[in-house]
Image (cartoon, rainbow, N blue to C red; front, side, top):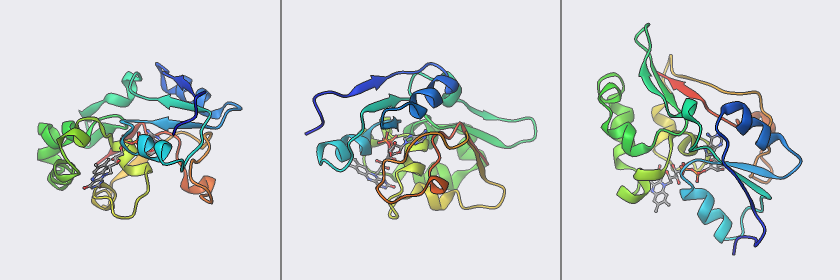
Length: 164
Ligand SMILES: Cc1cc2nc3c(=O)[nH]c(=O)nc-3n(C[C@H](O)[C@H](O)[C@H](O)COP(=O)(O)OP(=O)(O)OC[C@H]3O[C@@H](n4cnc5c(N)ncnc54)[C@H](O)[C@@H]3O)c2cc1C
């Protein structure tokens, strides 16, 4: 069972999100919550605060930049990735992988950021992004990892964009 007392923050900007994650409380980011919900229910994580990123418009961008690269925000869902014309054109492998994850209910809410940070080695999305020229822009590590034993170096609190 999740704890009875759990702070739930809904920041509107990346800066607010980083501040919520960096506070005194044991805070974790949440994208679609498909993994967070299961981890909570199974008593595998014990955060004091959940920082839901869905209200941050800057994390929802999906755009082709002037140099032709694709910029995808952390809270773009897998369903959006699979359907978006720019992704299908510029990154067909990513669109394909996003379209086969789980089931429609998972893809409707699971986000690119969550798919990258969750860190299950069986996940479909991370290997597709192991491609020359593909990188992530992230904030300085200021949050705490929900994973026992993981190091700050392997933990990125936010993934504003992945560019392709
Ligand atoms: C029924 C089911 C079937 C599935 N099948 C597949 C499958 O076939 N293939 C596959 O690859 N995966 C599968 N998954 C896993 C699924 O891909 C992940 O649960 C999902 O991608 C996580 O995305 P989310 O946005 O829901 O993450 P969340 O649950 O919100 O978060 C997951 C982790 O990422 C962190 N996080 C989330 N967003 C950010 C961010 N922007 N910055 C920093 N940290 C962040 C959270 O703190 C948490 O540690 C399945 C999951 C379910 C529940």
